[in-house]
Image (cartoon, rainbow, N blue to C red):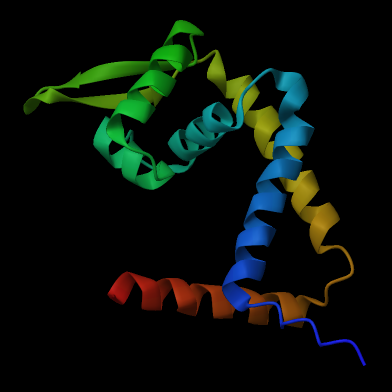
Length: 145
């Protein structure tokens, strides 16, 4: 009798799901000519209610400041974002989307929304809500540590 395969661990499965989700979204967004890092930054900026500082945006995206600075340089050169001075802190800069970015954000959101619908197809609403509750609890527990 062959040895049993080790059970798939929750963390490994969650990591695989997150990577696969982003890879699929990246594939669906490829025709827009944006790298994953760029569309992630644009989405984060668009979803933060008030224009974030560079530091806040780096924390939200989960990258180091210098990495974000290079991404913002590129997005600024493409005309998608602007850096604005913060009067009360000369070192800080707020990051805002330009009018040119708005149609792109709408496309990213539409593609993302369609992909979400495609991927949750066939999942019972009650099961989905239960899964979301579990994920929220895990996040809350992680933020306590």
